[in-house]
Image (cartoon, rainbow, N blue to C red; front, side):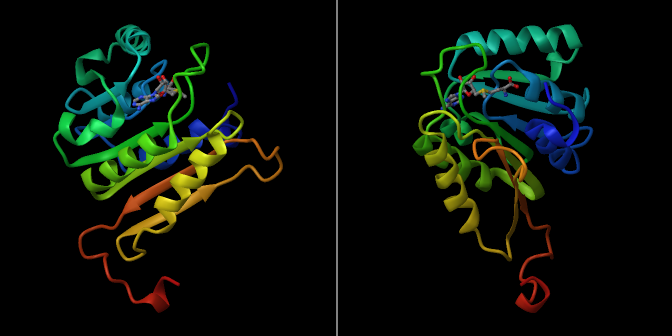
Length: 201
Ligand SMILES: C[S@@+](CC[C@H](N)C(=O)[O-])C[C@H]1O[C@@H](n2cnc3c(N)ncnc32)[C@H](O)[C@@H]1O
């Protein structure tokens, strides 16, 4: 796996780490093999809580094993469901949410995240976020539907009220057009809202 600035997942983790500390609450919206859940579980520590969602029971089994080996399964709740249901499954508010989109590496490529469900889940996550909480999305565009999914996520993210949310997009500008994209959304803190436009053009 690529390290440092070459890894989209690493970049997403770096940007989420500022919003998620000991005792925090986080959602992994696409548990997969569990690498993102493991990162979140370590961030929140023994007093925190992580909800890891996946539509594939096999993915949750892999996640569970990884967490057990790392000794952090105690703070993770595994949810066999679709992430668009997160408002019904998790008590808000939460400090951080990660979406690592696409299909499970080494798994069935047909069981892939879709534009429609991702957009619904992202809107749910926005509602559930604490002030100063962050959502990180790692978006892959090389598979069928990937470019469309990126466009849909960008549509939702770029239309957010600038006085309520800060949004960044990270690109690998010397890699191919199919390199993954990272989008991070931060909810404004209490009292941060309504900055004059001149200070936040
Ligand atoms: C790129 S993988 C996630 C990688 C993972 N976070 C890891 O660390 O290994 C995408 C995952 O999203 C899951 N997925 C697809 N549609 C979903 C949905 N609607 N709700 C929740 N998970 C979904 C797939 O089953 C797959 O495991």
